[in-house]
Image (cartoon, rainbow, N blue to C red):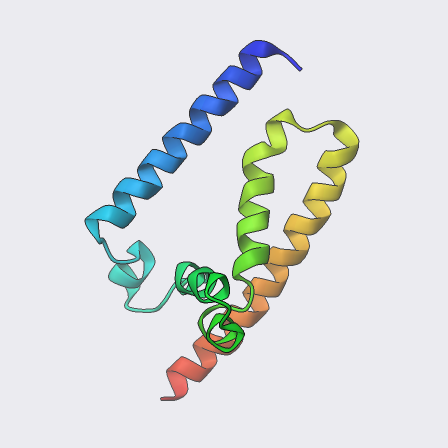
Length: 116
């Protein structure tokens, strides 16, 4: 792997983490929810992972049952530029599967939200 590409990749990761940390620290609401008054497709992911880390599976599935697969998909998307060709194909299949699953879940959750 090219050292320059790796260095640029590491700086991107540091930048993304810094933006995420600042966003969480400042307590901003979800931008999608703030603009549309509907929760976003990934809403509840942070609470779900925290519940999972505390061993509470019921809360994890209540908040966002696809939080771990979604975070894995984001991780793979970030690392796509430095992956080998065979690994990229597998990553795209996994990413696509998670995104389709989350879209279906989001439609069901949104329909339930709109009924009330």
